[in-house]
Length: 327
Ligand SMILES: Nc1ncnc2c1ncn2[C@@H]1O[C@H](COP(=O)(O)OP(=O)(O)O)[C@@H](O)[C@H]1O
Ligand SMILES: [Mg+2]
Image 1 (cartoon, rainbow, N blue to C red):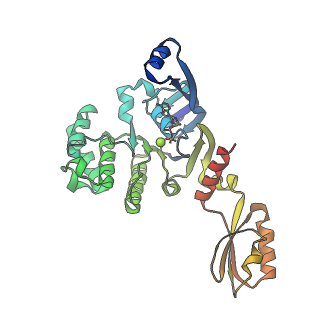
Image 2: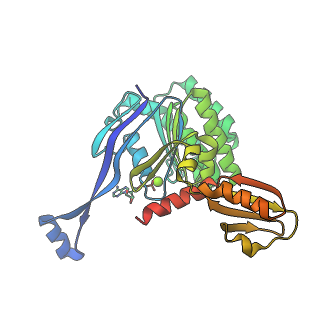
Image 3: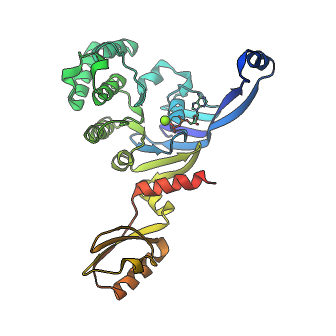
């Protein structure tokens, strides 16, 4: 029995077409033309308690839609879902107490009030006992280092401060299942790092199960052993991040240091030069030829050092998505 179980889930949005103007509006009452759009197609996956899973894919891939389905904000068109023993879209109070959906792009705090007011409102909504509320609040404000700003109007906070308060508001009921949708979007590098540490800590401390979507591969690289890749609503990959590299990368990177000036143009016949200085060249070569090319280079040139490396994961993911799109 898995904590989260998604079986063959699709989400179809029906998009109605309407001719412009009043006549169009009247006509559309009698004959409504529509197209069906598959935001998610036949997704199946399961997640165990305590896992921290990265959910990646380009814009419009269906990440947010999936998280909304998992948290019960949207119902699936087909397929079945269990989260923590509940059917999400029934939105039972006990289910809602177990989960939280945090959206980096959507502000759920009261704009004109200090964060503390929103926290107190959530205390009532989730019926959190006073002592528990105070303890959790103290712990979260400590962890996120925001004690000083709890009484400042949300509109006057920085993006990073707001995001931290957003997290606190969504975590006060101490949910053990978190859906984090782009939690670090728009934040500066230091703040991204802090949030990452917090997410890691929360996962460890409560054995919380977390699904995280992000534009930033760094988030996923640092936090998640397992990644799920989707594109155009379809699941492309589910497994270890290192496997993504093995499966999708056609190339390897030779990083070469020469002992003296070398003929740059000549090297082009071996692969693509993606970086070079007076003595250093990074050469991208076909994966299955990398050993032969390396041996050949060592034979022909004065080389001090040669390393065969995997290309950066960002590059692999980028090329994976652009290939898919051109199909
Ligand atoms: N309520 C909706 N009605 C119609 N189309 C939608 C709706 N919500 C999302 N979509 C479409 O579904 C696709 C997936 O969206 P989304 O899940 O937000 O992608 P992602 O979060 O991966 O960027 C997009 O093409 C989006 O335009
Ligand atoms: Mg999204």
